[in-house]
Image (cartoon, rainbow, N blue to C red; front, side, top):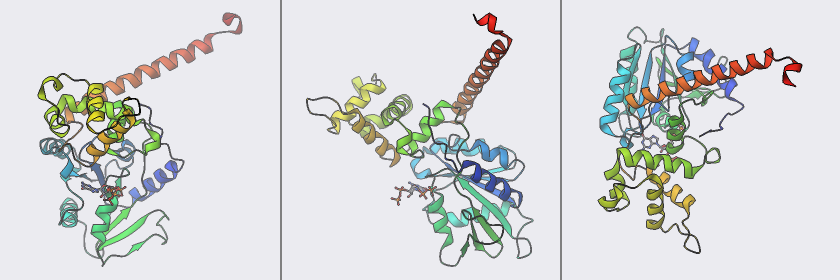
Length: 314
Ligand code: G4P
């Protein structure tokens, strides 16, 4: 699915982050625990190379516990990286983050050497919820000091703990097709940029293959025959169950799609994670291979065009 979400301010945001990264000690990247790798920003990985990173798998209350554990292990095995899971509205989230950051950077702290941390995350990942909880009453925020861009905020979580909040930064291109769908299902993509019916069918296809009992329970479907249903059968069933029927008895697929997406986003179907580390690795491998093939094809066509004289073309 081609998702068009290429905001004009992306380059500006990218530059602001690239500049800020130079002067921070570490980076916090907020991820959606239901789609950790898809919610990572490849651009951020590039920009923050060599800086210690804390990956926060947020919305863990909506994610599959077993899969969250697998993702934590996956990230914690990466160099310069620590990962924790969180529900950003939970009590103690603030302390968990500051403690982890301090443990990662034992040489920073005290008024002379404040720990400077940059926090990034895709839209809707829960960054504002977390920051609002962290700010409390005591902290000040500034956006109009020298060296602080308008869109950026510096938050004083303690005298020696500064948090820089950056404007959202999106992807240059989503090459993994499954990521596009997972981001769309999670609610990270604006409604205008996606086809809800297509996204809901992809979601149903994944759920019927990996979380069938949860689907059956939520939508009160008999185990038999629903264990053999395809995504389209499920969408029709949900439409009927939810009264998404148009005059004349036709199925209102759009309405049914909205229903399933709303249910998923609110965690009504159950605790679900749309990707595992091994699935992700395999999707990425396929996507990179496809990109390389496309590039080779484009280059071959270009060379062919260049080699052609006008007479050849006649
Ligand atoms: P952003 O700044 O990264 O764009 O995200 P924001 O904090 O606005 O959060 C987006 C939505 O995700 C909000 O719901 C918020 O309540 C919810 N959220 C944030 N963190 C968590 C979490 O850890 N677990 C769960 N279950 N939800 C979380 P909303 O419906 O858009 O807004 P509201 O009705 O809560 O105000």
